Length: 522
Image (cartoon, rainbow, N blue to C red; front, top):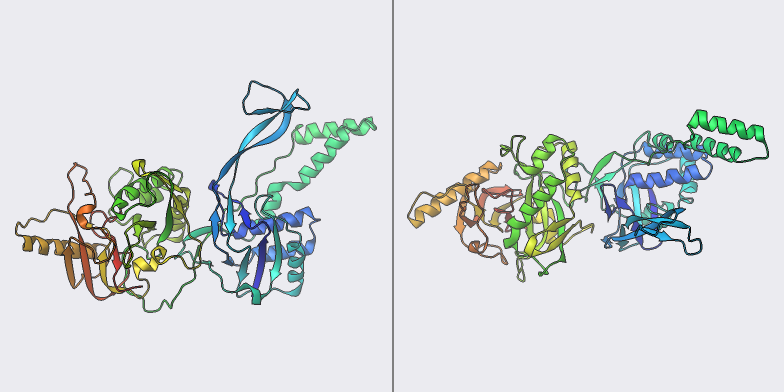
């Protein structure tokens, strides 16, 4: 095994997500760690042995990570002074330098994202990799030169870690079950960083500028000015910001053997889970009866952030095709995760989750995860403003674990709804008993619609089998496009064989209604 250790000396990581400057990046992206090593290499003489070690490192498969839990610090906006210029007291963002009143400094708006760490040490590990002694020595020397990862305030100590100190990873590369997307290095990244920095041209330009300003040798001065004009157009050479565009999906390690999986649905059992916390508003928690309002606002926010992505991804996120009609196949479903099924359960929303269609390929799943990562706040009007966050604990609370809602991989025979099933159509029967049988058949057919076997029995009820869930009449009725309301009811499902979720039934299955949870799991 080969591993790199990182100690965050200040107890926090200061680095921003590429798509959201106000959100801290955690766990650390392997590509960011590689760029820190590359920067140390170029800034300390570019030793050939170090370069060979970095080229070997970029050729490896993406590493697993052992990263401690982190608590995002609220983003604070600062106004940072930049270069001096002539003072202008009429411009509010300009700060006058008191000692030199004729000069001033612009203040640029900057946001510094930080995450406070539960433990100060993180590891990148390659369990099946053994490097030769020359590469190891070069990497040890290079790690000793790394002073920061991310922002300059994110001070670190790096070293080549011993296998005995690392322990088991809590994030592993897995595109199928991916919960997060991390940038990773790839062959050619070191050369690309070197090309973007354009170091030779930068050094040549700096030397010519010095010569052009030196009056002691008029001939050399004229020659330098001529070269600055002819070779550089009297402009500094272009330097591009370093980029790492290759992403890889990461998930928590599997808890159990995956052989003998139970049949599942058209939705992936690997839910993308977010915590839900209040930012401002009159309530400390939201009740599960607010599920539709939360899901609708979340989808609106996601659709507004997906305009730059391929059409197929926009369709999956919105649930509509290019002409505005509903998709015939499965698309993104948004699920409320409520504290239920416990003696002290009160039904409040602990988090929310996104269920992706099972047939998405790795690239499409990566795009959808990028959209999900762009929305970190929901404005719910009178309900207040709520934060969406990711729980990076190795073992989150049971309500925030996908298996609590999907019973993956072994499955469950007994399921009950946490939010009521919205009817596809009104039952036609007038007699109560016949109407219940018709509704049960409708719900059984909804199971086959999402790929499940037909249940042996469906019990239609006004109350859920899960403690903490409000009766069906407490939940607002969903409206059709013509303004009429859909009826709904809770249900208990019994299958002849164990099945896996997510079980999302009825006309509201994409909007937080019809969410089933296993009764005999956990």
